[in-house]
Image (cartoon, rainbow, N blue to C red):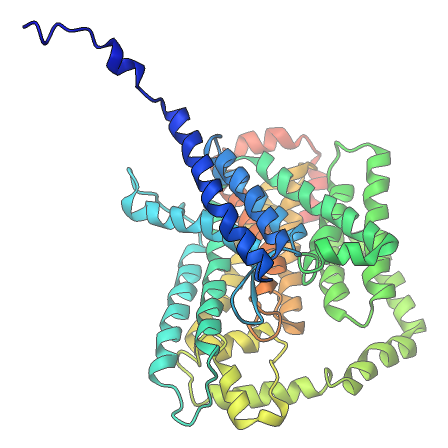
Length: 494
């Protein structure tokens, strides 16, 4: 009894709280890491920018774990990393490097997928027409990876780095669609879509300004993130806001339209030889104009056709003839025919992720090139089954986008703008895929680093799916009451 009655103050005095343990662990980690970092840096095996990015990344990650809604904030962080962190990437021991945006996407998507099995309660997908074709494409991509190993041509020349590249290509091909699914299920408030649009517009202004003032600095920060379909999204959102958002002031509309004109000048007049930079942009803006006003559409179309007719010879020589001389014009048709000849031997699940590259190197070593076309890339990598699944993804995106446009028609607010722009962006993406691998970057063309610009499209389209889900959850009378527009105006969308 006497022993049990002893005071416990000496033992309590040695108690250590969680904050002290955490601080000690951080200090110990730094003390252990500094010598290793110094050794690698002296040996020339460490990029100082990578160390700086790692430190910032750890700080941001710790901060995200301490705040609410970290999933939505992680989505914003994802497009920030994709847009302006082109100068930082992880080495793979090969020519390809892993972009930071890809690591952020993995950090978001993998725990979400695991929560579907081990979550308490398990996470469930929100009902959407996009779910089945998207999941089917992911499954087919994985099957095609193993299929390509089993049924590989025995005469095929496979170099030592290809297995690593193929596995990385598989991760890219399934991570991008899964990112769309993640965004669609994570975003449940309009304000997060506003953050995404704001980031795109800020990057559009910053990259455009640097391209005129200091192109080298602009390329350092924004080169990879502003390739592909970025110009389309930046111009489309600026144009959509100017046309559809009734809450904007005249000077704000003027600034947005000025941004659109500068983007058109940058990508069409100065960079007209890069068709991927301006054709998807033009397609999206034309469709946006059609939704806003039929009269404005016909006026703009007429002016555009007159301009092209007057300058037809100039643009034909500068674009078509120049691409043919560089081997990017009619030669592409030959590449597609060659690609189809290999698909004919592997029609079901294709040649696997990045799989047609060894076939070209084996049988067409003197002219082994990628197809520069996402549709043929997907057909070659995943076969007819995967190709059909991907086409169904695009079809369902059109359906969801159209339903979203109808749901918010006539409101003249941010929601209607986003619905129209994203729906138009699906058409722009479909056109852009004909010109290059801007939706699913091919490992030996855009490389894995192409994830930086491709992920923006999947995130914004995921936002479109989320917007349609939000519209379904709000009763129709409430939407009509918020519109407060005459019937004659709403009929423009019929």
